[in-house]
View 1 (cartoon, rainbow, N blue to C red):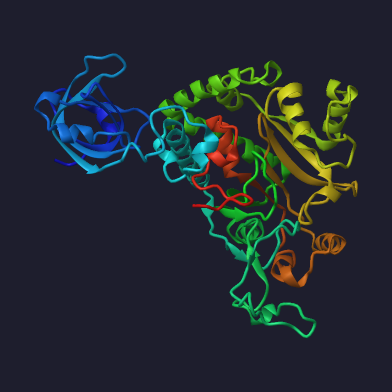
View 2 (view 1 turned 90 degrees about the vertical axis):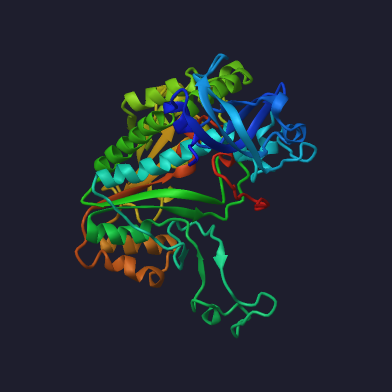
Length: 476
């Protein structure tokens, strides 16, 4: 018989049907009841073995995480919590799992421990639920943009330009590191390298996506990006995925509208596609909140929080207005902010979370940041001090989206590049976009892991990507 996935069996299995299921043993109890899971759902199917007529040596091999194939009959379940179960006709062990060696026995494991077992942690309920939510969100992204007529654009991972101007990039080379070619000045001669110049792993596909926007109208990228930033925090990764739409003829307001619409769409899509996983993660989130100090606990459960964000308009205010709000706040007046608050600062996570979680109690979009703390490509406002930037701030996370209207004036762009030390020769092609049919355009970047973090209710970004890359961490 053809194998049926457990998710499909639980949804539509008919009493009396003969079925074949395959998966990994979650538990085997009373020498009779197998809880089997194949990854298609967070729920297990119970298979009941006639232990009196089954080889004892075979039963001993039914250990946690052993892979098995079961042929059996669907019957009405005698126990609580499930509609159906399977009575086992034939049982085959596909792969043993020695209980003396297998590290994930049926007990509570810390997330820190599970990170050390990244190759096995998807077999746990928590991590498998997170990965299914991640999968749904990834599909939702493509669905959202395709429904809106955007073109999916593949931008390069290896690049000769620094889109953010931050310099925190991983270098890519194939020169002999023990005996590299040198210039007369004793520097590595990258002209002898594979690409004939110094290249890096991309920090963003934005600049290349602007090329697409200025010809195709509306495009988006969705791919890996890299930051050589020595940040060991719960919010940063060295390798992560970014969604970056770029749109011709969009101003800053259009940009904000699209970002808010996209976020709400993704939340609704995940809730529709992953109800069982999110119900489990909601319970887990509630337990985690109980362990926190009272003043750090969320007012809403995970599902309530997702619905609240989906149902309510985001608060919109300028950076200057946000600074005023922070200066009027009790934490500022009582000196409880760790970092200073003054116009011109780059807002820290504590400031962003105060605005979202305490002041407005909803997502916030800040606009019109000081130009000195933003990238060279952002459209300058007439005041000469600010740019048409926007950041979307979320509870528990801080910044989840960063974007702007892009500078479409060649003169202003080149002047800003000179001020920030961005070489023209590296971006000659980017400058030519402003020479040949320039037009107003906008875009933003959504860190994919941050939206997965928010929707899943997890607290550490390393737990929402299968193989996290961070300083001193690339074991898998």
